[in-house]
Every structure is written in C-alpha cells, then in structure tokens.
Amino acid sequence: MEKVNKIETVGQYNEYIGVDTRHPLVSVVNFSEVPGIISFRHYLGLYCIFYKNIKCGDMTYGCQPYDYEDGTLVFLSPGQVYGIDSKGIPVVPSGYALVFHPDLIKGTSLGKTIRNYTFFSYEVNEALHLSKKERKTILDCLEKISAEIDQNIDKHSKTLIVSNIELFLNYCMRFYDRQFITRSNANKDILTRFEKLLDDYFSSNQAEQSGLPNVAYCAEQLHLSANYFGDLIKKETGNTALDYIHNRLLEQAKTKIYETSKSFSEISDELGFKYQQHFTRFFKQKTGMTPNEFRNAN
Image (cartoon, rainbow, N blue to C red):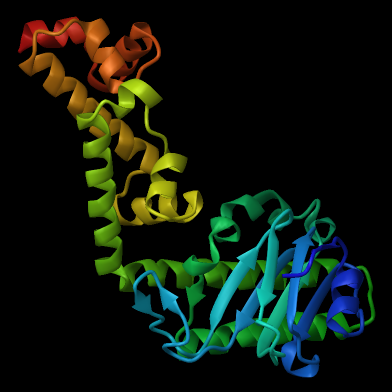
C-alpha cells in the first residue's frame, strides 16, 4: 500500500481522481470517466459516499455472499482512512462517488442531524446492498445533485444541493432498515452470539477483572462497528444495546442476590462495579428496591 495522502478539500479529491471541480464544496464523480487506478490510501476530511457496482459472489458479507448484485453503498465520514490495494494490477472503477465538505452543511438542518446517519461510522463489510429498484432511486438522487452542481451558483444553490443530499441520505436510511429486515436470520445469529458473549462474561471472572461490559467491547468481540451493532440490536429487540446489557446485568444481579448468601459487596465486585454504591444505585433505578430490600422480599 502507498503512504496515506491527505484529502481535505473537494478540489484535492477531484484533482487526484482526474475530474474538473464544478463546485468547491461538493462533487458527484462518475468513475467510468476516470482512468484506472492501482493502489492508494487517503485520509479524508470529507463526507464520501461510494456507489460500487459489484457482481454476486465477488465479495462476502460475514460468511454469506452479497445478496444484491446491482450495487453497494459505502459511507465514510471526515477523519477516516480508505484505500484500495489491487496487487499492482490496474483497476477500472465502476460506479459513482458523492463527496462533500463539512462546510457545505454548516448552518443547515442536515448539519444539525448528520450524526443521526450512523451508517457513516459503519465498517465496509456492513455496507448497504441495493436492490434494482433501490439502485434506480439512488442514481436518480445522484443525477439531481449533479444537475444542481452544474447550475450557476446563486443564493438557492446551497439550499437545493443540501436538500437533495438530505433526501439521498434519508433514502439510504430507509434502505438500511429494509436490509436489517431482510437479513433477519443473520441478525438473530448475532443476537444469539451477543447473549452468549454476555453470559460467558458474567459466568467467568472477567467482569470482576475488567469491569462492566460496554457496547464498544461487545461490538468488537462480534466483529462489528459500534454504530452498526447498536442499530442492529435496536431493530431486533426494540432496546438499545446498552439497555440490553443492563437488562442482562440486572438478571445476573437478581440471581446472585436471590440464590446466594454472598454479601452485596461481593456481588458488586463479581458483576464488575467499581464501587458498591454504584451497584446499589443501579439496582434501585431498575427495580425500585435496594439489593437488601429485594433479598428480604424474596
């Protein structure tokens, strides 16, 4: 792999790709119009969305081949590094890129809600795979953004471009929701592994040694990004991943209080709480009773 190049402006990205800069803060690139590439690594100061044409079987999602052959969307946010290593063989790109600078959305409604589009922090293997109908919608959105970029810049340009980008992202959110549903079996497997991970964590002495499990730890153990993992658990259970962990923690606490004669200090340590008063506060918030009141009542 080459050294990491810094790409902090739309102009720098366009220059590297070899296309004209039509707007200083946003660009839609048709990869069929750029020359072949071999290898690169970029540090990005931009929001980038890559639409890639793939064929079924070329790539896998976990242990499964991609189930949509018409296209894939990959999302990157400022501060991320991405690249291609083609092993020295020139690759002719296929697809599109939507690239925009954070300054484009400052002071807009999208600027205030951009963090809600959590897929910008997903890993590449958690990409969005489009059906044929979804692909047409995405390409229509890109065409509208590109057409607006081609207009002479006036007082309406920013509003219209940003509005179309926001529409594009909202469609992506809808399609991700569809993907979570159509991959329900795979998601249930992740949920099962999540439950086993927590059971093993609490049944061993890991909680006592390492403290309470958190969402980032669980996601890492399941080889998922924290945001994708959190979104998946929310779709499958209706609870956040943190709530799910807390519910499991509460079950463990109740079992230990009810079935053992251990002191609350011992139980607190075994569950991973740093201080017993934190355990007592957590238990009362969840049950309305202190651990001692719960033991006496049962």
